[in-house]
Length: 396
Ligand code: AMP
Image (cartoon, rainbow, N blue to C red; front, side):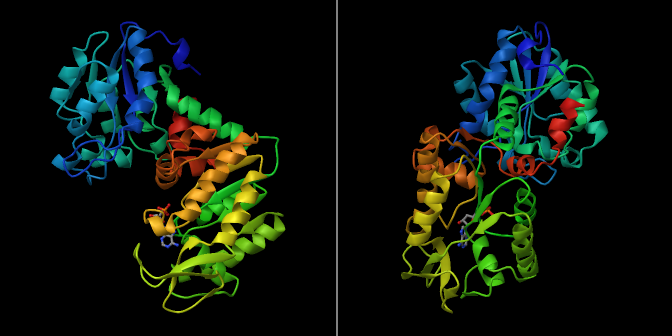
């Protein structure tokens, strides 16, 4: 397999799949350029090697047709500024205009194609569409970890058109190396922390992680379906009835596989879903009607922190409570701080997913953990041991 650091880019156009799916405010300004910054090393490697760059990405969910709101033109100033050179833009990702623009690129020049998801063929992984994308490059680089678990045209199908000249970008390579380090660590205990709103979206993750870890912490809204499965009263907390049986099955499987599942023993409850609601603390299994659990309680913060600080490998995805509201952010802060402490004590700590990354950035702790992944869903699928189509397409 070719590596980006020993490929000769001189005189070549590199077609790079990046992840420029950045947040924009109502004035269509980029509010967090982390993903743009993360793509710079790969772009710079191609340019320094004497090549030209054609960038392709999605932005938001435009439903397969052009939409002003999701145009990548909103990010071009930020990209040019961060890269320190002018970036030109094509009005579409395929067709005459895009082909004309990419075919006349010279070494050192950078072209950004318009949002891939303006065409429904992108998400369906259409081969003809992928072939049209492939015309823009002499080699293909995938540097978008966030979409590596999707078999889309630009992440997977397009690689077929570059049987030899295909490779991972520096960011994706680094992601894979870090995930592998966590997965294949000889050090124990390995602890996974899974939080977020719904158990339905993360149930397979938890199930598959049972084969990989010694302990699993389940926090956030998901914890209440787990508490109910244990016969608890959860008041008006988030509850997914359809997943009650699955939650029971998880406990049984965990016993079989000798994995400890930890849910919060106490909970911060509120009478309304508002930052200034009345609050109280009670056992997670004794939440009164009319109240809902919105964060882990103080005893749980202590017990979860001590689990984290005594682990040798920690994987974290998903907040412990409704951390967007100050009143219910304390549990997520406690977990973020415990990750930093564990790292200082020599543990390997890795986190991903929009909310966990936002939380760690908000509390200024991102430099104090081992690795912050740019993928949420992709990170979880990789850690579950699944083959990600975007990775397989390069390795094949
Ligand atoms: P997810 O997208 O599944 O990772 O869920 C993230 C969301 O879960 C965040 O927006 C949190 O506010 C929300 N969340 C976390 N804990 C709770 C809870 N106890 N009740 C309701 N929502 C929650």
